[in-house]
Amino acid sequence: MEIFLTLSEELHFGRTATRLYVSTAQVSTTIKKIERRLGVTLFERTSRRVELTTVGRGLRDDLVPLYEGIQRAMDRAELAGRGITGTLTVGFMGIQAGRFVTAAREVFERRNPDCAVHVVETLLHHHVGQLRDGDADLLLITLPVDEPDLTIGPVITRSVRYIALPAKHRLAGRDMLSFEDLAGEAFVTMADSVPGSWADFHTPRRTPAGRAIGRRGEPCATYPQALAQVAAGRAMVPGDAQLPMLYQHPEIRFVPAPDMPPIEHGLVWRSRDDADTRIRAFSDVILEIAPALAVPGTIAAFRGADDEPESAASRVGRGRAAVSGRSAGERAPG
Image 1 (cartoon, helix red, strand yellow):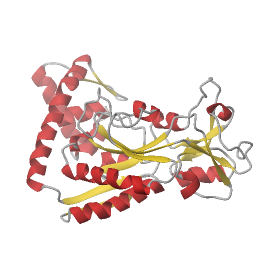
Image 2 (cartoon, one colour; image 1 turned 90 degrees about the vertical axis):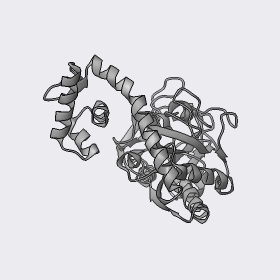
Image 3 (cartoon, one colour; image 1 turned 120 degrees about the vertical axis):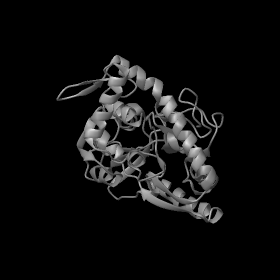
Image 4 (cartoon, helix red, strand yellow; image 1 turned 180 degrees about the horizontal axis):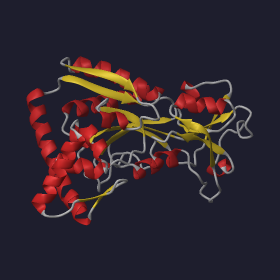
């Protein structure tokens, strides 16, 4: 089941083998065995591509909820016997998120002395890759996230969007910007590993009136790399209220754009880890400490659907479930 579902996602025998730590031959043999048993072809294979057949797509859709149920049952059994122990690896994106995570680690480890927290930085080019690679169990990152196998937990901060501009830019002296002011300007280009939906939300290609906004420069894998392009006068970069406080640079000006969609940071983890009590406990600590640490101009730590109106980021990247275990069709917190 695991080999079939992984191949149906990767559509590549080599990547499937790498992901499952098995040989390519084992993947191929297993799929052939299943097809012989069922008497149907599940994948169309050529030398250049692998695609699911109609029957294969139907089998995948039927098996996914069953497989996820098995995973949750196994996780619950394991966690019931283990409790909050071991090591939890938490990634953060941005200076403010790093402050939250490191402060939460102190509180969490004091309350749960049998569980250590390992903190890692999540860069732009990582996006959610650290969850997929097993390098992190939980991320506090910039939303939206639109991945079917990940849970979008509580939104931790929401802020008016800021635009980082070269100090000599024609708009740099403004007290605030409108979305339409960005027509004809250019954002930085994101690294290829950054999902298109995330890049389009943060660096839109058009204003609400349909006027073009460009992208310029070499692809940026980190936020400091993007700000370096701003300082060099090559492009502009979006961000939130932490920019003017935590990313000061003499060649950059930070101007709010209040009519653009706000910027949110939220918690994200693998949906198969929904039952992990360590993740839930750490999420609770983040929610607890965020209000005291949030920079001015940031709304911090809201959990429920009625606390704040739903933002554009939440609509784009709601994910499969929320912190209370909602399904993908239900509304996520924040």
